[in-house]
Image 1 (cartoon, rainbow, N blue to C red):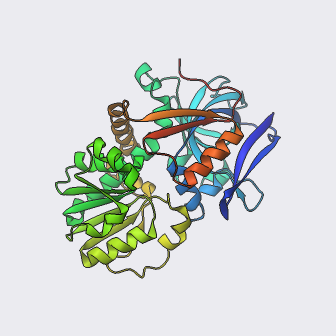
Image 2: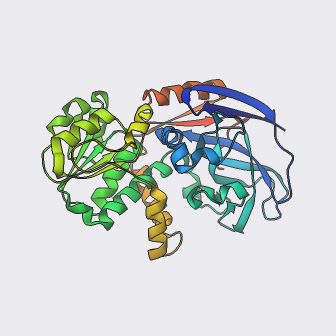
Image 3: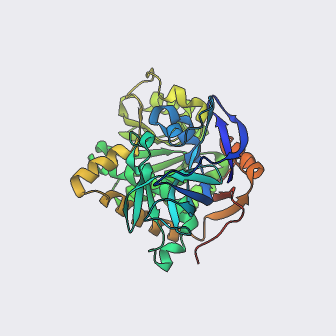
Length: 369
């Protein structure tokens, strides 16, 4: 079975390589899945930028330095199985490489899903090792397949950010500033912060071309272009940095000084600055901290019970996605060359936050029936 994959140079994300090779022989307990479709978002750029920090490169190791497989969220179908509980034809949702096929090793199989039991993945965050079985989905949930791939991982991150802040009484902030306000994680966080009860102002920072879109969402009290970041009101503030733009961060730190209570680095749409984002701090005020969603999820699992946090996040994400169905636009693209093009556009921040990209390297794409 010949596989096609897109690999990314870990030292230069603009340098990509389309690889075709034969899959390894199927071992006992393993399955081969054909990845029907997957989302390509700014989240995947962040996975690449923080891959060495949080282990994202380790999920699907290529074995060839400096090449890496950037993980994506998608839908796949079992095409070969030596695992008793997973049959050919079954469809699953989860964390895959940018490729046509992948080999998984199902463990802890229950009707709703399973975990990948491959030995190299056991030291990695369990959130990314879980796969949902789609056979039991209701028609309403099945109709949200693309949204599940595109928006749920981003919206859930926003949900966890809002939960972290509300869990800490919003750090007594009077305002929350969201960088890269047009990003799906950014405006998702803004929506969930309000739902969580934050009473202060929520300010969005974005490129001037995205201001109208962000204002129309209705999640921000005020939307400013990056060029106006130095005009943010001086009062106790939490900065949620989705872009990793060090110039914007520096501007806010110098503007707010000790009134900047938290400076939380979440995303890396300005991926070339990520190393600076995590370097020792030389800015006025509080030191920037890198956000890691699994840590807050693990805390809530201990407090609320395993899986409760994710279930709440999925429900909230589904509701938000449905409320924005007339606003967000989904594009479908197929083939390795198109994927290379879209990856480059994502690196250059050329994809609007209003647009979602669904990609496929399989022979054909399919939707839930």
